[in-house]
Every structure is written in C-alpha cells, then in structure tokens.
Length: 318
Ligand code: FAD
Image 1 (cartoon, protein in one colour):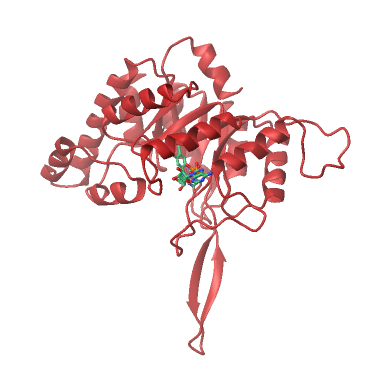
Image 2 (cartoon, helix red, strand yellow; image 1 turned 120 degrees about the vertical axis):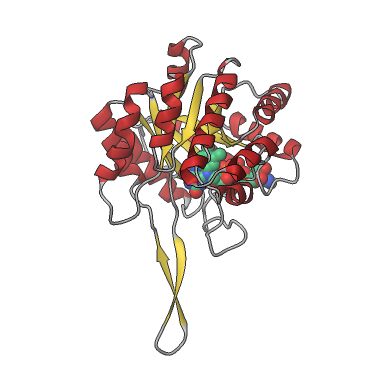
C-alpha cells in the first residue's frame, strides 16, 4: 500500500515509522530482523531502507603507487525490502539515488522493485562520493532528485527509456522526497532550497520526509514556508535521538542541523554515553509529543541500525 493511502486510512491519527540501514557487507539478514523485531508492536505501516552508494578506497601497491578500488560497504537495499515485506507484511520503502546510477540503471532498478510488489520509493540525489568534495552525476545519470522524480513519474505513465517499446506496463510508485527544515548544506538559502523542493513535488512526488532536526520551531516554520509557497503534500518529520557525545559535533557537520543550547548543556553534563542516550530519548519524546499536536501523519525515526532507544521513545507515545 502507498504511503499516501496509509495517511488517508489513519484518518488524522499520528503513526509510527522508522528507517534502517542495510548491514555492513558480510553480516546476515538476522541482524536486520533483530533491529526490527522490538519495534513491530508499534505497528509501523512502512519501514524505510537506505541506499549506500560505492566508495573509493586507495590501496598502496608494492611499487608505491596507489590503486583505486571501488567498494560498496552496505549493499542489499532491495533484498532487505523484499525480506521485510515477506516476513512482516508491512511496506518497505527503498531509497533510490541519482549518484552512481545511469538512467538505464534507474529504470532496471525500478523494474525489479515493481516485480517485487514494492510500490513506494524515496527518491534522493545522494551525497558526493566520500573521497570527493562535490556531487558528480554519472554519465547519462541525474544531477538532481527532481530529475529522478521525473523519470519515475514517466515510468508510472508507461514511458520507458526505449521509446520503441510496445505495450509497456506502467509502474505504480508513490514517490517520497527529502526536505530540509534548516536548508540543505549546499543550498545558498532556504528560499532556494524550498523552490527546488517544490519542483520535486511538481515533477510527481507525493510526500516529503524531513532531515533530522532538534528544535520543533524549525520544523513548524519550514512547514509554514512550504505551505505559503504552494507545497500542499504531507511533510513527515524525521527525528533522531542523540546517543553519543561525539554527535554534538558530527550532526551539525553532516546533517546541517543545529542543536539547541539546552540540549547541548544536558549532554555535556552526562558522565557517559548511557546517560547521553537517556537525555536523547527524553528530548526526542518531548519533541514527538509537541509535534503530535500539530496534525502530523507520521513520526519517522532514524534508527541507524539501533532500535533500543527508538523502542524506548515509541513506548511513551504509541
Ligand atoms: P536534491 O533535491 O537534488 O537537492 C540537492 C541540492 O541541490 C540542494 O541544495 C538543492 O537546493 C539543490 N538543487 C536541487 N535542484 C536544483 C537545480 N535544478 N539547480 C540547482 N540546484 C538545485 N543519502 C544516501 O546516500 N542514501 C540514503 O538512503 C539517504 N536517505 C535520505 C533520507 C532522507 C529523509 C534525507 C533527508 C536524506 C537522505 N539522504 C540519503 C541524504 C541525501 O542524499 C543528501 O542530503 C543529498 O545531498 C541531497 O539529496 P536530495 O535528494 O535532497 O537532493
């Protein structure tokens, strides 16, 4: 079932959903199930599965020269989605990127998803490859998520890349896209970022999931801005509980999210990461409770492969 249909069916009630990461290459599917099992009692209608593109590793050879190797540390997005749908009978939403994909790769990826009975996708540009500063599209790939959304919409209309194809079956994907309450790192300002978010909706996206944020005012004012720019689709807040002191520095840098002074002070008082985890859970519960008063269809949690703190939060709310 599509995300949009889940929202309609819930009739105004806020539901629980979460995102997981594929395990590192070499681990098994049980590690994924072990993370999902404790969260199933909160009835998530869908689970997102992230996509991780290739990285470049440089290995020194005997002659002193460096050899470039391409590695994918967390493959398995599509397989995990199929396994989730089979085992739990809930919708799994694979993330799909522009980065590393030609248009032909994208079409074939979407065909696989359709055959597996997956009818939601989260369409993203992806970041630059880790060893590079700027995002570079594949030759014959997409530079922006809005173009990827257009390709998915075209396929939903039965328009495949090969215009000679006869009697081709349209796909039927509900498309989600990313939104940034504190703007995307590369965007010159929020106005510009919202302008391009609107383009993703115009090209066929049905809902938005936000980047993590720790101050609800940022989310509410982002939603107001989107509405005033004519974006009417659901905007699902993405939330992450802090769990380590190190995240005070990592999160602002990697996700362009500000941390409120009050939260920083509480974390700095903590003796160890167990105490930080407790602060993170309490902050996230308070954030969630306030958001729930604002007609929010889903509270979407970034589990990052660890479900214990997400479970503690869900027990307070759902
Ligand atoms: P876009 O919407 O393409 O925007 C990228 C930047 O370009 C923005 O600054 C935007 O303002 C600007 N822009 C857009 N269109 C244009 C245009 N036509 N001209 C000029 N500028 C333009 N990353 C992963 O690798 N795997 C994942 O699974 C993953 N899941 C995510 C889930 C969520 C909910 C979120 C919020 C992010 C996720 N990311 C993931 C990270 C995401 O890939 C990065 O934030 C990436 O840098 C931007 O992706 P986007 O889809 O927002 O890009």
